[in-house]
Image (tube, rainbow over all chains, first blue to last red; front, top):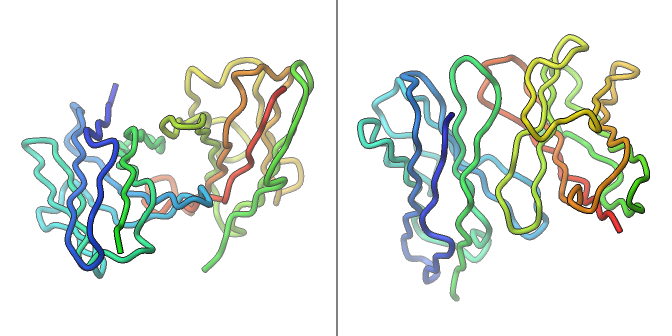
Length: 114
Length: 114
């Protein structure tokens, strides 16, 4: 079974600075998808960024980018120019190629200091 | 952007009672899901549904749970006899295709079992 691990329960960053959230996963599959979801206090799950495992190029969405290291099974999220609105829980998630079930990590609570 | 709608936002029930959580997926989506998140814990997959039948379910989704798409627009999760440990946020989600990586989540129903 796939597992997703987020080793940082909490992180803090100064406004306008850059922060990196870590995620590792375990799988025997070669094709899969990886995601970062943001969960603000409203508890809605908002997709931040996604990465297809077959793509070597790291995904980027505005201030959000990932460092995908397939051999190391690592998928970190970098948030540049952090804003107060970035404060939330961030979940890393894995989806295999055959099924449609998402496996989530335990989450990292990001605090942004003004 | 289209939204997945969930009602109610909060549901309080007595242990042993039946509850039905309702979701309206995005209108042209074909695959539907329920996830749950116990407070402070990771988001967990419950079940996926396609073409009026369950396509995948987790160990959590035991005989006390059932899903239904009664009228072509609503997608419901029924818990037959609620237990204290069923208290959680329940998220509905939908996607256009089986391998489409964009999963749209609703804003959740917070279920409290007393």
